[in-house]
Image (tube, rainbow, N blue to C red; front, side, top):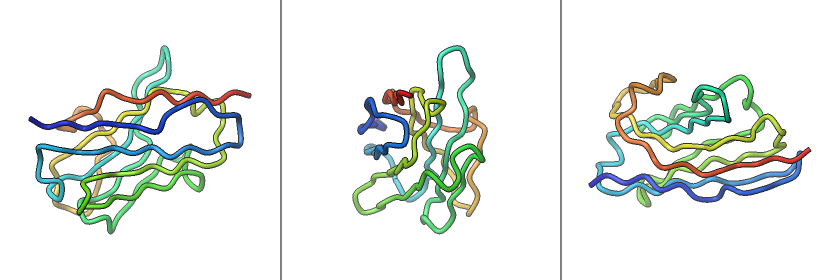
Length: 126
C-alpha cells in the first residue's frame, strides 16, 4: 500500500519559514517524480514545486520561485520543501504527490499524479 505522509506545516508570521517533509512508503521511490501542490479555501489545487526522480531537475511556480527550495533523499524516500519569506497568500493545505516518471521533466497537472498525501496546513499570518 502506497503512503505519502506530509509533516511540518503550522502557523507562522509573514516573513517566517517552514520546512515541509513527505515520507513515502510502498513504492519504488526512484521511479517517481515528486511534487508539492497546495489548495487554498475556495481555490483550485495548484502546482508549487516539483523534482525529477533523480533530483537533477527542479521546477517552481512563479509565485514561489526564489523563496522555496525542493529537495529529495532517495535513500530515505523523502522529499522536502523549504519555504522561506512566507507570505499570507501562501496559506493553504499543502499536498505531496508522486508521478511515475523517469524523465527529467515534472508535470504541473494534478490529474497526472498517481498518489497523494492527505496534506498539511500552512497558515501565514500578516
